[in-house]
Length: 190
Image 1 (cartoon, rainbow, N blue to C red):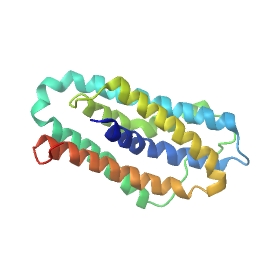
Image 2: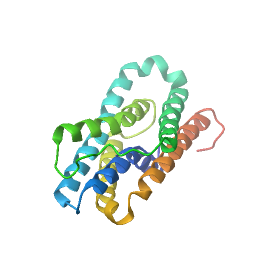
Image 3: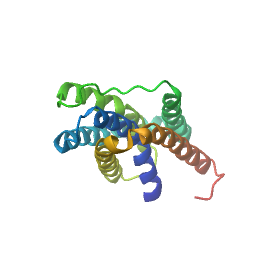
Image 4: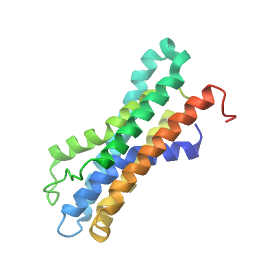
């Protein structure tokens, strides 16, 4: 997996955190840089940790499923992307009530919930030619930056981008899964 694909994956995985960070930004009466930085740190940290845990889990089973690894990667990324697209069409909700104060318990729960997809994506890393340290670093930094931007910009743009970004992220994950599948089946030259 090249840098461009890895970047698309990182952005796609960060879209749930982006949307929730935008909700937190909307809940602030005025922009609070400390709150936005702590939110971004939690989301970025969990998004980096979960694929690493997924990779460690996937390595345990790698020798048993190497013949179908491309199907597993396709199914997991397709499921994650499909879930994100499905969430886009659900009635809008913003799980960030009371974002004015930093509630570490709530923030941990939100960061964990938005990074479950990254755990599943990390499992696919065990079957792909990928630098795990580079992948988790890029995913964590991308999520940190996008979460901070979302929290900061939410007041100005009204959170309109958050839901559309979730739709685009879901589509990107499905396309990456499809590329992995078609590439390993020999239908794509790259």
